[in-house]
Length: 354
Image 1 (tube, rainbow, N blue to C red):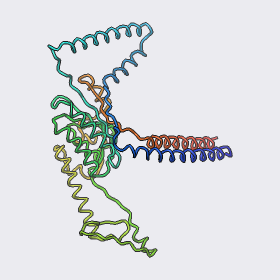
Image 2: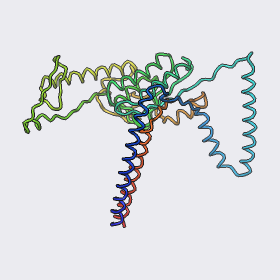
Image 3: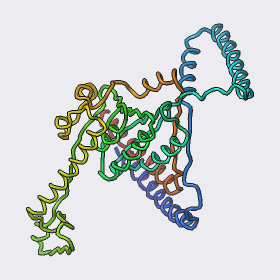
């Protein structure tokens, strides 16, 4: 036990020193980057063909199941086939008299939502790139969506980005493996088709607002708080002042109005829904969501994309923002601290078991 205590103190000193050094370096680098302004590119578009990824996975497991003799024969046949395909592709490119129609493409986008829908900007850029090349009525966009919702205006913008795809006449499919609730479902309902895994969480078509109020605490300690506004409804609720019944009612009216807009938005995009039955703020899991028509099919995103590889070129498109050095150092520090905490907790747990 004494060893663990000494070890913990030593780690604390090391971590304190490292964090202090990182803070100093971050301040210096951040100041340098501000001087550079916005002249540098802040990210890059990444495009990856998923057909090749799934093909390599399939071939890898096939090779491991073969005997040594079978592997050699299979490898020889594969090289011969690849060579023939490359030769055929080269011939097609040089044959200008017989141009071949481009294959159908399925563009795969990802959105991992937080309360502020921070992924909206990368999604916006990826969508702009896809819309510049996708063919209406032929190509398809798949959005792999994971979000429990958040700020109304933030998710309203994220959903509007997906609306751009449908307005161009391009089929949109939403795949939900874990959760698309509240603002997340606002985004999902834009799709022509929603696919979800068996226990994905969907729905939560409702609006919530909550805030603490410290008025009684301030009053008890003889602290006055004044808020000055111009306009009857400029501030209906406050966390420090005394809230009135009139202010609360106006706040509730605003929530109801927002809920009504949310319901209208979902109804317009999924008219087959019984919106009165599902817009209660409740959530449904996969199969139950299918029963109430919140989704159209039970299937994981992997299953859908692997099947899609047999009928189209499946391409993953994402915009990766370049992280600044302070951000990289922050992530590294966070990971190091998390690792250290888990090591210390594991050591104490093992000591207790012994």
